[in-house]
Length: 475
Image 1 (cartoon, rainbow, N blue to C red):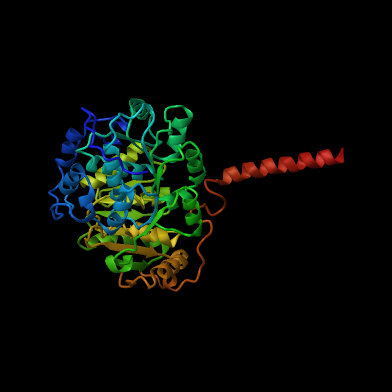
Image 2 (image 1 turned 90 degrees about the horizontal axis):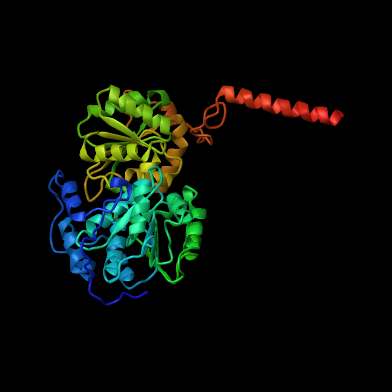
């Protein structure tokens, strides 16, 4: 698909909207942008005229880039923008914090700006799929930021909220649709979304979608897309299974793989503290004895543990809030916004927040529990040390976590420096050879959420079945 050489359209009173506000309702971008940026501190990024591959973009986009404080493209932006302007399919691999979102948003906005007709009701021209509600909202924010001088429309749809405003926005017609797979299929089945006009299809964080079991949903979406389209496939990691999946979705793609300029070990000051499982809360509170713990994300494995850690911090006078999959979308958005503006110093999260969240100036990441997959560790600590700033990652390691730490160090290619000079140091955890628990997060005496009462009920039910079979066999 080649870019049409036409002047950008200028439709009156058609503008970009903020996705998570009013849950899909379209708004004027100018007033919303002023309100969103009025209370923010002055940008510290160097300002200047956009250079390099940014010079290939139309003036409206260059103006938005400069207004946001950028002048030079990141490596993935420099690689992707020319190919996407030429209409090529693309498979991209890049870690979080590399500017990947802008790498596909900018050229897509440029191509859409040449359209002279309005989008049809319920039929977007661009479909962007993201694995989580938070990442979808972040992509929507990027569209608003860079499309503020273009008269294009977009909306974001995801589950966990009432669909009324999302349906209303789709019936009005949008140029760009950002969606999570589940809610998209729901609205498609209800007839509120039709995909026959899609010209550009983007899959972001596909490895995360694979982990979350969304691939069957994506395959259903693919059957409704037109064969002639431009497809972009982005993933933080790319194993053989991912590569095979990508090849089924793209045609003659360009392959872009950006290695980080410096590994996480070198960019971020990392420390591991060996501690007994029962002393983690006590050790956590001592971290605030050191200066600089201004904006902290704490990662736990389990949702109930995130709630307990947040409550413990609140009881100690440290403003904290938890975010995880059991929270409603309204509660998650409120918590995240409060963390961004400084109402809370600490965000306690499960891995739902490990990717895609664009929160500036995070000083520390604390791994209260080590992740089950080594790659997730990289995504977690990637929340700090962004845009050239200093970052710190502190990991707690109990005896049960020791094998997980070995896998992380194997991935990084070197050991994570250990700090043993703290009051809760545990030699048993340091030298443990225990394997990682296969039932991490499950209750000790059964599966997830199984109480002793429930087990007794099941035992009685199974006993009744055995008695019934015996009785029948004797007849």
